[in-house]
Each structure stands twice: as C-alpha cells, then as structure tokens.
Amino acid sequence: MGHSRSSPLLWSEGVFDGDRGLKVLFPDRTVATVDHIVPTTSQARPFVDPLAEEMMQELEKNCKENNIRFYNIGSGGQGIVHVIAPEQGLTQPGMTIACGDSHTSTHGAFGAIAFGIGTSQVRDVLASQTLALAKLKVRRIEVNGTLPTGVYAKDVILHIIRTLGVTGGVGYAYEFAGTTFEQMSMEERMTVCNMAIEGGARCGYVNPDQVTYDYLKDRNFAPKGADWDKAIDWWNSLRSDADAEYDNVVKFNAAEIPPTITWGITPGQGIGVNQTVPTQEELSDEDRALAQEAYTYMSLQPGQPIQGTAIDVCFIGSCTNGRLSDLREAAKIAKGRYVAEGIKAFVVPGSEQVKQQAEAEGLDKIFEAAGFEWREPGCSMCLAMNPDKLVGNQISASSSNRNFKGRQGSASGRTLLMSPAMVAAAAVTGKVTDVRELL
Amino acid sequence: MSQIQTHSGRAVPLIGNDIDTDRIIPARFLKCVTFDGLGAQVFADDRTQMQGQHPFDLPQYQGATVLIANRNFGCGSSREHAPQAISKWGIRAIVGESFAEIFFGNCVALGIPCVTADPAVVTELQQRVAANPQAVVTVDLEAMEVRVDDFVAPVQMGAGPRSMFLSGTWDACGQLVAQADRIRQTAANLPYVGWSPIAS
Image (cartoon, rainbow over all chains, first blue to last red):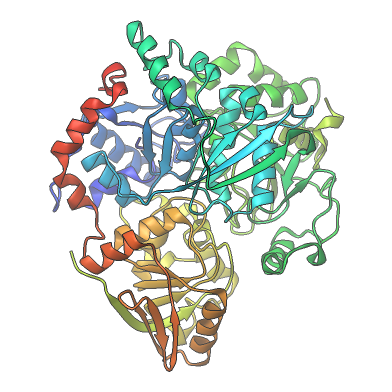
C-alpha cells in the first residue's frame, strides 16, 4: 500500500525510471491513497501548502504512470490507509501487507501479517513484491473476560503497553488472543493491533474468526460467490493451533483494566484515570531518567492525580480511533452536552466512507450541536503534516497513538493519549475526566 | 554494492532512552520529495531547545561518524527520514543498547550498521568519547567488537544483517528483483491473488 508520505520520495530519488530502472512488479497488488498531508478543512486543489501540493501531484502522477489504483480525494474511498484498506475489503486473512507507515500493524486484526516499513523497503516491495526480513518470535497476549463499562479497546492496548513497556515487543510479533479479543468487533481489534508497534512489536495479529468474515462479507474486494466459500475454508485453516507453542505468553484479566491515559512522552508512560502521576520511587531504575524528562516536558508533578488536568485541545480521529464505532462512542458522551469554554475540540473521520456513514447516522449534528468542529477525512493532528497543529505548549486530549515530544506539530506541545470517549469527556468538562462518570 | 566490515571515526554520544523518530526528524520536515537537506534538520526541536548545547551542535563532535546511543533508539514512526537525516549529518555507524526494529531495518537498507552492546559498555563509550572527542571509535563487524583506545568490548548484531553487511548485500533490492520469476510463481499459488483482483 502506498500513501502520501513515503511513496512520492521513491520517484524523485530516481529509484523508479531512474538509475536503477526498476519497474513496479505487481501494480495490480498495489493500492494508494492520500492521508498524512491532506488538510481537514478545505480540501480544494491546489492545497494551500505548496509542499503538500507538490507531494500530492507526485503521487497522482506516479499512480497514473504505473497503473496503481489510487483513492483520491472525492473518490468516495479516500482516507487514512489503515482505515480504507479494511473497509474496501482489501485487507484479508492470510495476506502479507506492507506500507511505509508503522501503523500498518493495524491490518493484523484480520489475521494478516502486516509490516510498517521505510521508503527503501517500500521500493523493494514495489520492485519485487517481497521483503528481506528476519523471522520474528511470537508472544501470545491473552486477555480474558468482559471489559468493564467505560473501558474500550484503546484502554486495553494502553494497559498492555504500560505493563510490557515500549521495548517489550522488540523481536516479537504480538498475537492477541483470549475471550476479550474474541468478543471485540473488527474495529476494536484494529485499534489494538494499530498500537502493537508502540509496544515495540513488529506486528500485531488476531486469529480470523466469524467476526472477521462477517465484517468482510460483500465488501468491494472481498471474494464473491464460490470464491467466498473457498476463502472461508482457507481462512479457517490459518488459525493458530490450540496446542501451538509460543516463545512467550502473557495473560491479563479484562476486569482489572481501567480507563487508561498517558501522562508522559512515550505510550508506555500510562496510568489508570484514577491514579496519580508516578513518583521516582514508584519507578524502576531504568525508567527514572525518562520520567524526569517527562515531568518537565509535560509540566506535571510526580504524585499528582491525572484526573482534573486542564486541557486546551481535544482531537478525535487517527488510524487508531477514527472509525465509525469510535465516533459513535464519543458522540454518546457529547450528546446533550457542550464543549467547555476555551477548549478547541474537533472530530476527523478516518475516511470518506466513515464520514458519510457518520453523517447518515446524524453523528456530525450531535458533535456540531455540542460545539465540536466536524472535519474532512485525514490523519490530521496525529502527526501534524497538515495545518492541524498544537500551538506553543498547548495540551491535548487525543485519541491518536503517539505522545512523543513535538508529535502534534508544536515543539513544546503536549499530548495525553486516551480513548475517544475519554477525549469527548475531556472536551465537555475541560479537564481529564473519568468517562464512567458521564455514562 | 560495497562491503561494510569495519567503520572507524570520531564519535558523538547521545544520552537518553526511547529517542523516537519524531525527535530525530519532526513530522513537519517530512513534507519533502527528496531526502536532501534533512541533515541540517536532524534533532531540530531538541537542538533549538538546547540552544547550541545538543551534541549534534557541539563543536567538538562536528565531523563525527559514529553515534553512541542508549536503549530503544529510533522507536515510533517508520519514517526513513530519520536514518536519512542522521546519515546526511554524517553518521556511518551506530552503537546502542537496543534499536527499534523498523529503524534498524531502514538503517540496513541505507548501509548503516547498528550494533548493540551492554548498557555498561555503552556508558563507558559515551564517557570516553565525552572525555576525548578526538578518540577514534572502531565498529568491527568481523570481530563483532567496538574499540576505542585500549578499550575493547563485544557488540551484537543478528546473523542475517551482519552477513549482508560483510558480503556487501545489505541493499536487498537487487537480489529480490533478480528472483522475479520465482516470486511470480509463488504469487500464482496464493489463493487470494485469484479471488481478489485489485487492478486499477
């Protein structure tokens, strides 16, 4: 899959049609869209930002010249690459998928092996449809039980990363298993696999099951007719055996997972919403230096409750939480309430289809009545390669996946990661709030 | 394709765990259609914040070609802009406690060996380089060791990437492309290629 960050570079670096004379080996197994660079207010062409416009023109030209299917703005299929490929039925069990974006791990929710790669490796895939990779170890992360009310897929993965650390997954693929994942919808599974990379794992994975097949049935590129039955047989054969041996197994109890929020500058620096920012004494030796850096950068005091922290900006969207079910959960909180004074709150659907479906359900009207801005699809403020950015040291409640320093477009901007419902709760109260109090 | 067996050069110590690729090259610099110019922007925000005191700005480390980093270096985004920016600043080899995997893979594709060493070794290297920025650090992929002055310590790298550097096959592209016929055969046997045509 190609998209708007890494792909345009290949041609301008002279890889294709240039010194190496490479050709795209399987244009018919390649798709592209535009996500990182699109503005979410007006998407009129040319884009206001000339660099974004230049990248867009490169992408359009390259797709056309190489016969690559391209979901352009206004096609009805444009959006964040990790939202559109599943909704088009392009993501299927048993596939190997690669894209120049680390959150390609999302597609593992379907029982696919999906890797984020860099630009040179995108070149390798376009030119050969293969990648040179070392074999991964597999860790089974088992979560069992029913999630408490007000606890979402986002909380599950933030809790896992908080427990296993941001380097816990290095060398591993994470297989998410157990009754909690079995009960999850595909959109929830995608949220979990999306952030496998934040735990250091190269990819995330969920065994395909009836939930997967119900999601895929009748989608654009899903197999049809007799092929559908053949596909089901093959997909069923892919599941991990009951007696499979893993390199490592870790178990969690869903009942013990709280609404979780990050307080620091990596996705591993998370706490339950009712907990306090950890003190140095509560941390291991190796986590202390980073915690010190985080206290200073985030302007948070060790030992202070995270709940009640005043917020400036609320962002609902991204490839982690920009899907229809995310917007529905956030709308439940927003409905009948109003964004607190002085807060900028905006909702960015993950794709043109998500936007259209949300509008059909009237979610846009709920958000607008509550004082949220309703935007056009794109990656938006998650990484701010577009006009959506924090300003100065603003602090955001964000449904996205990274709270790194400067991530949301300001060198001193601060990010608290949480579920979309928690972001909506922060928007209407103006501060970090336990969403369970508003349900 | 050139073999990379050893690299020697002056080094720059960069202390800190979990230095992510957003810090190495902030997203606003990704709006580019070539990698040229990224060297000047490496660690842009950290350097601004540190007002000339960032190791990449300190005069004694200008011209360094070995980077000494700590744990989980290069985590986060898959952006190849990160190793490109480091490379265009002048770095040719990295010693660290551990590396994020996508970053490591990107470095292999660019011919930048990343070797890991025990935390105590990394700290020793950082201290020695800070004390004597003129010291020459050698990263030796044949002996799998790092040397500076009289200090010698073992380093690690997976067997696959190591042999790719030693044999000069670290740019996998050529080898993969040469297998196009076998790849086509394999693709023909993948069931979904038949039932989910996605041609434009």
